[in-house]
Amino acid sequence: MSSRLRSVAIIELLTRHPDGLPAATISQTLDVPLAATERLLQDLVQTDYVAPSGDHLTYRLRVKIAALGLAYLGASGVTDLVQPILDDLAKRTGELVRLAVIESDQLTWVAKAQGSKSGLMYSPDTSAEVNLPKTANGQAWLACLPQKDIERLLARRAAADGKTDDLKPAAMQELFAELEIAKRRGYAFVSERYQTGTSAIATAIRQLGTATPLGTVSIAGPTIRMNSARVEEMASWLIDTAQELAAAAASSPLFVAR
Image (tube, rainbow, N blue to C red; front, side):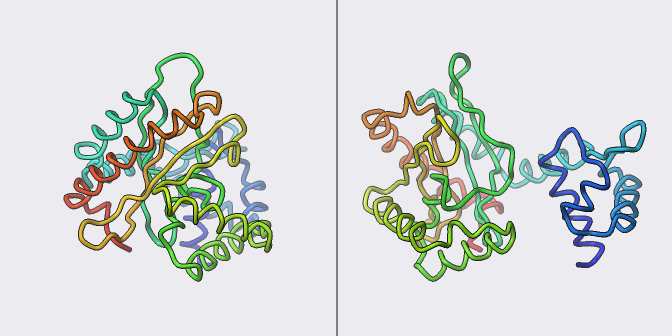
């Protein structure tokens, strides 16, 4: 792995640890020699992407990374075009609404709106990449793909994190059965699968004219509120929102068939 790729890997790792990590932990996690890790960290410190703690024992990301991401999302039209649509759905459902886009064989979270202002709320994990087989968003995308592409995406994920449970025959059979159901009803539903106590529904955002999937939109909340009657009611709103987002996508470079 080149030093450039190692630097990117360090940044991606630190996004999951806002309090920072010691250089030794970063080295061990990424399987990069400690001396090389420390050199890369110093380069990132000099470019203001990473900040050391006062005693230089840990390193964390600076807000410059977040600022760059927000600037890009604003320029891409998410703030002006997409956010009001998400806000409307969140207000209507009283639940968490999230948007993910497809890029480079990944589904990545890019925007959200929280409908519930008090009481029991769903607080999602902070990872950027969507877990494809275990989340409603992931299944909504996979339901658009042929089997060979699904197997390729899952194999890529397994190679990246070293976990092969999702590739076992029983797990694959269960997933394909769930995807068939998602195709028939037009949305994916996952309950207590990814995070205990939570459920979600999601559907694909498809490019106008070609039906190519560009991303997904979801509604998630505590399972106690996501009963079958409520899910059925929200599903029609979700599908309408996906169509609105597809129209908005035509004006945003963020939504490009990849």
